[in-house]
Image 1: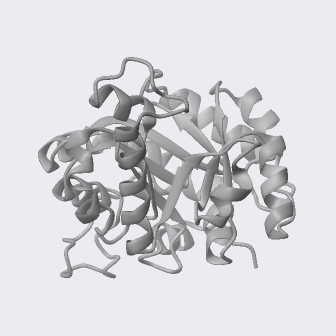
Image 2 (image 1 turned 180 degrees about the horizontal axis):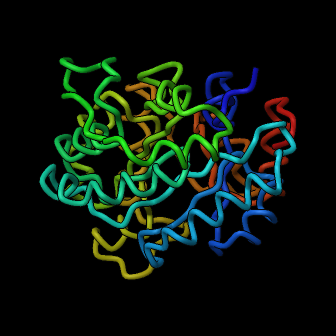
Length: 288
């Protein structure tokens, strides 16, 4: 049987995952994106309005336009949260963002500027229900997600509330979980703690955020390659930390480097349909 989350399904199989960015939150956009080429869709709420009505409409549109080409009810959707991961207190004070995004039926969250392991720990705990106990007592405390949004989310996932409550946990800590939590290690403060941050149980992937990482190193516009040596070293440190911990590393993939990046162990590519097709042919994977 298919997992709910196409991205976790592929990563379980050892296959790379390819993502695209949503530019419009509406029901019509969801219908259009329902058969996207991408394995998951990123909704950027960090720099765009925190539009919960739009996110709910978009998720309903995905259901209306589905299923996907791979037979899933919807593409997986991962929301980039606007709160910083500067410390645990900040994450907990903004945990309402976590609760509201998950209640819309999304399949994962991305924490920006994930600077400390304690902030990451608060992020994981805020995304989990307290009755999910895998990992609790071993670097994690009980989850803090409360009751109230599960009915809407279960409807998007196409399952009973009881089944949603069972599967709405963090993967790969919970092998049956369908939620993917990611980190942006995108400044020098975060880089100094990256090994401990990515090792917090419940994290599925991380990226290095070249735009903000470049600014942190004093570069106004260094989002795109070629990168200066300090930024290349930062990127390599984040990837090495992910590899050692066994979580996926996300990087931008382009036509001239997609095969090399896959062979080097990059598991998630932010890219285009054409580049994803090259990567899928290289690993013998069918389309999205």
